[in-house]
Amino acid sequence: MKKELNIPTKIILLIVVLIIVNAIASSVFTRFDLTQDKRYTLSEASKSTLKDVASPIIIDVFLKGNFPADYKRLATETEQLLEEFSAYNSNIKFKFIDPIEEGAEEFLINRVGIQPKYITEEATNKISRERVFPWAVATYGNKSVKVPLYKNNLASSDEEKIASSVQHLEYAFADAFTKLTLLEKQTIAILRGHGELEDVYISSFLQTLKEYYKIAPFDLTAFAENPEKSLENLKRFDLAIVPKPTKAFTDDEKYILDQYTVNGGKSVWLVDNVQAEMDSLYNASGETLAFPRDLRMRDFFFDYGIRINSKLVNDMQCAPIMMAVGEDNNTQFLPIQWRYNPLVNPTLKHPITNNTNLVKFEFANQIDTLKSSTKKTILLKSSELSKLEGVPKPISLSVIEKEPKAEEYEGKGNQNLAVLLEGTFTSMYKNRVKPFQLDNSKNEGISKMLVIADGDVIKNQVTRGRPQELGFDIATKRQYGNKEFLLNSVNYLLDNNGLINIRSKELKLAFLDTEKVLEEKSFWQTINIGFPLAILAFFGVVFAYIRKRNYAK
Image (tube, rainbow, N blue to C red; front, side, top):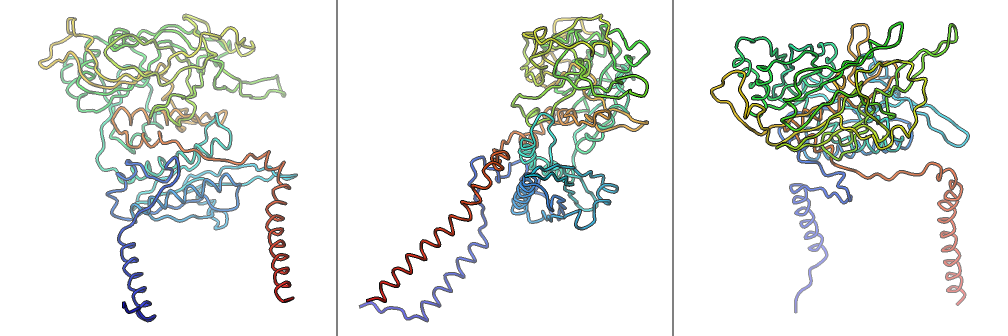
């Protein structure tokens, strides 16, 4: 007969088993994400960014304090995401700070450059206004970057903005980690020599690019007598940006750009084929003449599969301009919808446009796509209520006095404004006489190109000589998504798809219906408080009855 273990032996064995299990658990670490959308599963791009971080990255999160439930949700999601980062790499350290409680508001605003967000919360017979700092600061060694936690999408409701912000969190932090740890940078040329936008008007975007890439100006006209050398120098750059040229290109220059493209050079073209500027409208007459601009690039783009037409896009979904309304002492400056400023909502599910804010255009042109060897993706379109207007055409500020009629726009909208070209590019000089001879010319090659039919998409506003953030409208205080769209585009063209792919990750958040909460508040309070008490009373009565019956015997 088998002898049974005594109690002390059982206790000792139990302790030994617990020690072994604990040792295994401490050495084998794993986390399980049971959410349907895999919200807490880090993307490979995030893991790749964190893999080589050998010293601490300190993250101060300022989303702490007494604020509405939606922002508490954002704070909770931020904390859970940072826990995932920290679990993957223990060098990620974070803490939440209440800037109001700890008196750090002035420091954040004046020294760090972080502005609070003012939110209004309505409850029963009560309206409160709170300050929230939806920001974090990540520090790596002696380098720090700001991390925006709130994404202000102009076309969304408050709940949709919070949902978009939560979806944006992993990208925001992974992007910050990339800025802090990036060592090797690809090179970008900013083309000069054809009346492009001055540096002060593209300063905001250039400053953003410098955090990821090496940037240098490149003058195509510098070696006019030696085009072979210009091509050789241009090939050293991974991508070229052409910000709103206004002077025509020569045949030599077109051949340089053609051979740069078929040899794998990527490019972003921001082109206006119509001469029309807002500044020229602000005169005594309030009028200007819009007329075609000939850059001599029609055949260049035509052979790659697109045509930029010399037509203006008039769109009822548009950005406002500030206008003086009234006379003398009653004059007020009010935002008035300006239909030559299309406001485009990126709806295409593409890494460049996914989860991107509205993009503002100014006197945009229209693009046709043609049959060619390249693959074409329409990234941005005007709204359904838009139409084309031919030039030459007088443009007057008085047009705002006329109420637009929807029937004039029906069936004329969805005009192409930004087209991505990918794949095999066939040289425009394949069956033509070359402007100059090259020893190793190519007839076709694999590359990528983005063409935007408006040079002002990259243009930032300037106040008292100081460039403002790209996409920020000083007059209306609105922030558009121009910089976000262009940065995504550059990253995509240069195959930096890791961070972009994080944008494609879609999260589904459930929010309470505020109106329904107010309507049914009393009912659910009664259920939540009264039902547990009723259950407790029921069991008390039953217990008393059973006890009485047992003792009665």
